[in-house]
Image (tube, rainbow, N blue to C red; front, side):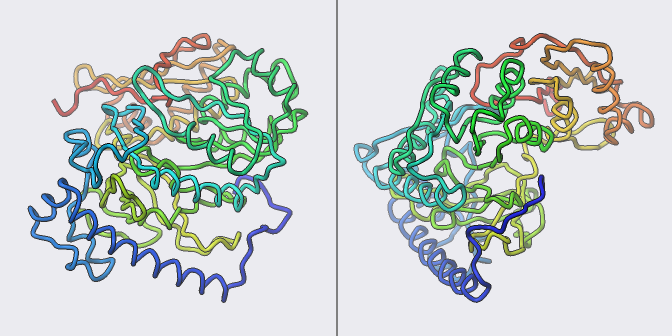
Length: 448
């Protein structure tokens, strides 16, 4: 919990009703899952060939445990031959979105009108139930459409969602600080939406010229990249607003999960996806509560369904019933399988460890951690953007890094890690040629 709640949830359902709805939802999910397996086997060249290769038929899946009989789909499969996933003629698709390509080559995903309508409908329900958005709200939306050849779907879908709700939506690209403040002062939006790094940047810059908690923004919705607790607390305190975090991927339909007012995990859109948690090394199913890789199967997709798609996100299904009363399962994201870097003498380190230290300093706007290896030793260079370039801030960051056991052990015990270097630079020094912030840069070529 990031704050103490002094009100009860608006969504609370009594346990008997909660169990009944949960039972109906699970039956629906199983029916849709079975239909999807048969549909993709019969219509998708990729899945028909893959199932046959592994000698599996849809009829072999008679329980959730049997899903492990099916091969998993990877991003590489999608990048190799996108059109082999199509279950409908290409002319039936009306939209194509691509990923931002933060950690790999961009991936293309195609959607029919049915697919988009399904995403929009479920998202409208989520916006109303969890964030209580109505036609009386005004939404400030600065999600980019993409950089270069990227075509991001978030902005398109969000505009349609708020159009259907009837909320006034203020949509632009990312403006200069002074121009952003003019829009906020003139239109007084109640909701702000963007990626966390952008909102954090606006927070730190706008508060220098205006008292942000007087602007009337009550809810800030973040997505597309991790949001460290320290960053979240800073945003909430500065704006005097609730920050809610969402989760999704372009390939699977953009809006997969979102926090309710309890902020104790993100409720899954179970009417659109079936979720598994697996051991990323063995592929075995893990129990609710155990941390593993999230694997998704779309169950309401017409044009380009995915079966057991590996997300590369590490997380868990939270086993407890949410106090808010919503009957949807919740997930918690812990990191990424491709965001985990080995360091020193066999330790692993994640972006979130650096996030908590760097964004724990309110003066830091953005950062990158660059990993290099020389003479058998790992070298870490932190480049952090700030308007406060002082020795004191530099020392705080260095001391915070040295408190991480993975770095401390490498420096002081195994002698496999050099003391980290911290470089403070002016704002906008780091490359921002992608929608998402890429913070860990590994130049060690460990596997070459």
